[in-house]
Image (cartoon, rainbow over all chains, first blue to last red; front, side):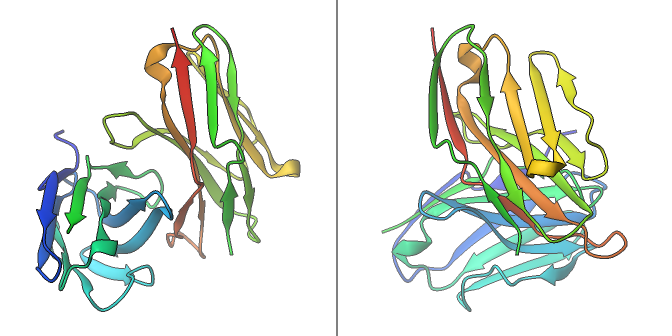
Length: 112
Length: 118
C-alpha cells in the first residue's frame, strides 16, 4: 500500500491567502484525522471523519479553518484567510479501526 | 480530561547504551488505549505499539520493550543497545474509548527528543 499521501509537502504563502492541504488516506480506512504540530502546542487533533462524516471538529482553531471529505479517498483542509500563526506542520492520518493511526508525511506550511 | 506527560524533554546517550523513555497518563476511564509513535528527523510519524488498558503484559519487539503499569498510570518505553538510527522524537499517546467502539480523541504527550551519539 502507498500509505497516506499528502500534498503539497511544503507550502509557502502570504498572509491573507487561501491555503488548501490535501490528503489521500490508505484505501479501506474509514477514519481520517487532521493534526497540527507546532513547537509551542505539540501535536493537536483538529478534526476527524468516520465514513466521510465529520465526527469531532472541536479542535479546529477558528472559522478560518474548514475541512471536507467528499469521498472515501480524499480530504481537504482549507485555511482562509491564512495568518502567520497558522505556520505549522499539518498531518493527515487514517485508520481502519478507531485505534492505531497511520500518518502521512505532513505538509509544512509557512505563512509570511 | 485526559492528559499525557512525558517529563523528559531531551535524552542524550552513547550508542549501545540502554535508554528508557517515561510516559505518565491521566484518564477517568477504565477502558483506554496507549500508543507510542516515533518521529525521525525526516518528519513522518511512525506507529510503534498499541496497548489496551486490560492488557498489562509487557511487550518486547527486538530491541524495543514496553512496560505498562496501570497502578502508576505509566507506559514506559525502553530501547536496548541503542543505535544512532534510534535518534528521533518519541511520542506517547492516549485514546479513550467512548462507549462501545466509538473513537475517543488521541492525546499526545509533548514528546521526548532522543539523541544517540556514535
